[in-house]
Length: 168
Image (cartoon, rainbow, N blue to C red; front, side, top):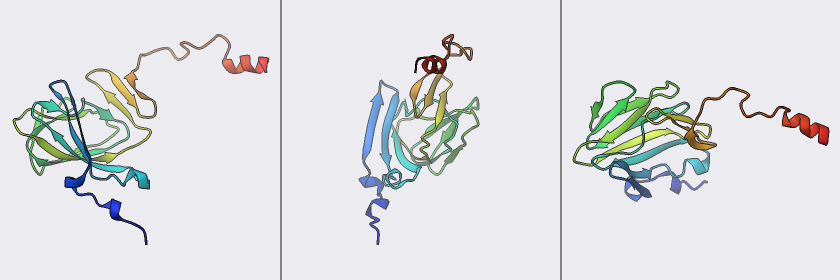
């Protein structure tokens, strides 16, 4: 019989980390599925708390990872592409499908904490774009900005493989 003690996590006991940047960014994340990845899974559920006047993450669009958000307490706003902002409250469930190139963001402009569940995958090959600032995340490489360049830009006159063949 296998040990299943790590498959159940009560939100009260979840390890939480708080990251606050400046006056308007950040929040608190608590993983409610800490056994998922170590056991080979890719789905995750986090309880996220955004203090008043903050957004947890920048406006972003996923290429491979669907996300869903379920509001537990407080109020927040949902930004989705160019659509008008939508106020959220307890019981609201938000769907953000991947591969639409439509960015999304949740924030808390109100006076009380905004608490919701964030449900999604952790794809090692994820690509995420940030239209407000031009950043791109390639999970296996890192985050930065892409700069358009011609296909052969920066390539040597003689391909390295041919130089090596001559010298080997």
